[in-house]
Amino acid sequence: MQDVWDGIRLGANAYLKRQFKNNCSAYFRLTVILFLSVYVVPPTEESKLRFVGYSDESLKLIIGFGRAVAFIMGSLFSLMVGQFGMRMAVQANVRVASASRRSFGEALKIAYRAGTVTGMLTDGWVYSAEQ
Image 1 (tube, helix red, strand yellow):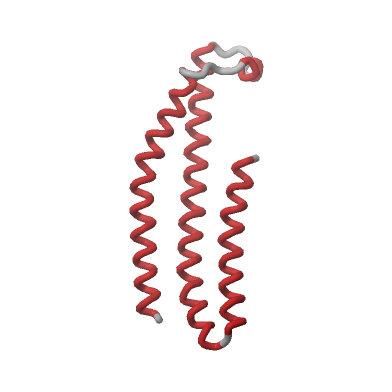
Image 2 (tube, helix red, strand yellow):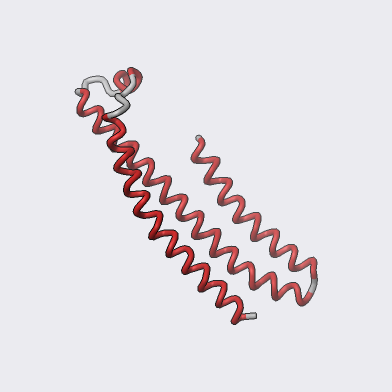
Protein backbone atom coordinates (compact mmCIF):
# COMPACT_ATOMS: atom_id res chain seq x y z
CA MET A 1 0.00 0.00 0.00
CA GLN A 2 2.86 2.39 0.81
CA ASP A 3 4.50 1.69 -2.56
CA VAL A 4 1.28 2.47 -4.42
CA TRP A 5 0.77 5.60 -2.33
CA ASP A 6 4.33 6.72 -3.07
CA GLY A 7 3.71 6.28 -6.80
CA ILE A 8 0.48 8.27 -6.62
CA ARG A 9 2.23 11.01 -4.63
CA LEU A 10 5.10 11.24 -7.10
CA GLY A 11 2.67 11.39 -10.03
CA ALA A 12 0.59 14.08 -8.35
CA ASN A 13 3.69 16.14 -7.58
CA ALA A 14 4.90 15.82 -11.18
CA TYR A 15 1.47 16.89 -12.43
CA LEU A 16 1.37 19.91 -10.10
CA LYS A 17 4.88 20.96 -11.10
CA ARG A 18 4.06 20.72 -14.80
CA GLN A 19 0.79 22.59 -14.33
CA PHE A 20 2.59 25.32 -12.40
CA LYS A 21 5.17 25.78 -15.17
CA ASN A 22 2.51 25.92 -17.88
CA ASN A 23 0.28 28.29 -15.94
CA CYS A 24 3.05 30.69 -14.91
CA SER A 25 3.74 31.75 -18.48
CA ALA A 26 0.02 32.19 -19.11
CA TYR A 27 -0.38 34.16 -15.87
CA PHE A 28 2.47 36.46 -16.84
CA ARG A 29 0.99 37.13 -20.28
CA LEU A 30 -2.50 37.70 -18.90
CA THR A 31 -1.17 40.04 -16.22
CA VAL A 32 0.50 42.19 -18.88
CA ILE A 33 -2.64 42.14 -21.01
CA LEU A 34 -4.80 43.16 -18.04
CA PHE A 35 -2.43 45.98 -17.20
CA LEU A 36 -2.47 47.24 -20.79
CA SER A 37 -6.24 46.78 -21.14
CA VAL A 38 -6.73 50.12 -19.43
CA TYR A 39 -5.41 51.75 -22.61
CA VAL A 40 -8.07 49.94 -24.67
CA VAL A 41 -11.01 50.40 -22.30
CA PRO A 42 -10.68 53.87 -20.75
CA PRO A 43 -11.46 54.47 -17.07
CA THR A 44 -15.13 54.98 -16.30
CA GLU A 45 -16.66 58.18 -15.02
CA GLU A 46 -17.10 56.54 -11.62
CA SER A 47 -13.37 55.87 -11.36
CA LYS A 48 -12.68 59.49 -12.27
CA LEU A 49 -14.99 60.56 -9.43
CA ARG A 50 -13.28 58.19 -6.97
CA PHE A 51 -9.80 59.41 -7.89
CA VAL A 52 -10.45 63.14 -8.09
CA GLY A 53 -7.33 65.18 -8.68
CA TYR A 54 -5.45 62.57 -10.69
CA SER A 55 -4.65 63.11 -14.34
CA ASP A 56 -6.01 60.64 -16.89
CA GLU A 57 -2.57 59.06 -17.33
CA SER A 58 -2.10 58.62 -13.57
CA LEU A 59 -5.58 57.16 -13.32
CA LYS A 60 -4.79 54.66 -16.07
CA LEU A 61 -1.64 53.55 -14.24
CA ILE A 62 -3.49 53.15 -10.94
CA ILE A 63 -6.27 51.11 -12.52
CA GLY A 64 -3.82 49.08 -14.61
CA PHE A 65 -1.75 48.17 -11.55
CA GLY A 66 -4.92 47.40 -9.61
CA ARG A 67 -6.14 45.00 -12.29
CA ALA A 68 -2.74 43.31 -12.53
CA VAL A 69 -2.33 42.93 -8.75
CA ALA A 70 -5.88 41.61 -8.33
CA PHE A 71 -5.29 39.04 -11.07
CA ILE A 72 -1.98 37.93 -9.53
CA MET A 73 -3.60 37.57 -6.11
CA GLY A 74 -6.43 35.51 -7.58
CA SER A 75 -3.95 33.34 -9.45
CA LEU A 76 -1.92 32.72 -6.29
CA PHE A 77 -5.00 31.78 -4.28
CA SER A 78 -6.14 29.47 -7.05
CA LEU A 79 -2.71 27.86 -7.11
CA MET A 80 -2.80 27.37 -3.34
CA VAL A 81 -6.24 25.76 -3.44
CA GLY A 82 -5.09 23.40 -6.19
CA GLN A 83 -1.94 22.46 -4.29
CA PHE A 84 -3.74 21.91 -0.97
CA GLY A 85 -6.57 20.00 -2.61
CA MET A 86 -4.31 17.65 -4.53
CA ARG A 87 -2.08 17.00 -1.54
CA MET A 88 -5.06 16.35 0.70
CA ALA A 89 -6.59 13.97 -1.83
CA VAL A 90 -3.34 12.02 -2.13
CA GLN A 91 -2.94 11.80 1.64
CA ALA A 92 -6.55 10.72 2.07
CA ASN A 93 -6.11 8.04 -0.60
CA VAL A 94 -3.79 5.90 1.49
CA ARG A 95 -5.79 6.46 4.65
CA VAL A 96 -9.00 5.35 2.95
CA ALA A 97 -7.27 2.28 1.52
CA SER A 98 -5.95 1.35 4.96
CA ALA A 99 -9.32 1.95 6.64
CA SER A 100 -11.12 -0.13 4.02
CA ARG A 101 -9.32 -3.18 5.37
CA ARG A 102 -10.98 -2.63 8.73
CA SER A 103 -14.46 -1.43 7.79
CA PHE A 104 -16.40 0.14 4.97
CA GLY A 105 -17.89 2.76 7.32
CA GLU A 106 -14.52 3.97 8.53
CA ALA A 107 -13.20 4.24 4.96
CA LEU A 108 -16.30 6.13 3.90
CA LYS A 109 -15.99 8.54 6.84
CA ILE A 110 -12.35 9.35 6.00
CA ALA A 111 -13.11 9.79 2.30
CA TYR A 112 -16.12 11.98 3.03
CA ARG A 113 -14.19 14.22 5.42
CA ALA A 114 -11.24 14.64 3.06
CA GLY A 115 -13.59 15.42 0.18
CA THR A 116 -15.53 17.87 2.33
CA VAL A 117 -12.44 19.83 3.29
CA THR A 118 -11.20 19.91 -0.31
CA GLY A 119 -14.64 20.95 -1.53
CA MET A 120 -14.88 23.70 1.07
CA LEU A 121 -11.48 25.02 0.05
CA THR A 122 -12.54 25.17 -3.57
CA ASP A 123 -16.04 26.45 -2.92
CA GLY A 124 -14.80 29.00 -0.40
CA TRP A 125 -12.28 30.29 -2.93
CA VAL A 126 -14.90 30.55 -5.69
CA TYR A 127 -17.36 32.25 -3.35
CA SER A 128 -14.81 34.77 -2.08
CA ALA A 129 -13.67 35.54 -5.64
CA GLU A 130 -17.24 36.41 -6.60
CA GLN A 131 -17.60 38.97 -3.80
